[in-house]
Length: 226
Image (cartoon, rainbow, N blue to C red; front, side, top):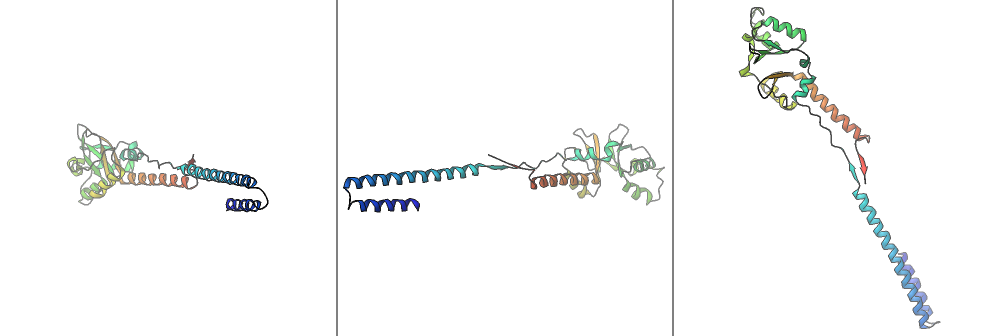
């Protein structure tokens, strides 16, 4: 190294000096030599420590990456986005099937929640009920009551507004149904969602995640801190 070469040159100079000068002068040269060597070592150590300190400081720098925001997309969220939330999705179970079909056609939906005389949940009636229990059997929708063909509450699959979208979809797939009435803790009906509502909610959630990842990829999703 440069320090070793400098030390060797000074040592040769001091040895040559012994043949021409006194020993005190040689001692004086050696003192200068060791002083320069010590200073060089000190500077080298300082540079080494500075490099180590800089490395530690750089290592302490972290990239702050925000977590992917997860919006609360549950059954209640899907309900608020559903077309059902803006209509009267119920019908009395003493109404005729003809009235029910007219309401289904008017609102362009596939299912209605049925209620008894006291306003309690009694079941649901769907397009499938009409096709299988009225049209195929040649019955008259005007002469048949809703309660005669509706799915009764005892056999009804329901969901809570706090249920996840995945849980609701699992219920639908397990029972091969396309609609879920939403009931609160007291058993009162607070809404109804369809499989279409759940699919739209899932797509919205995926698009939200894709947007966050895309923003991060172009440098908008994280930053460096000291």
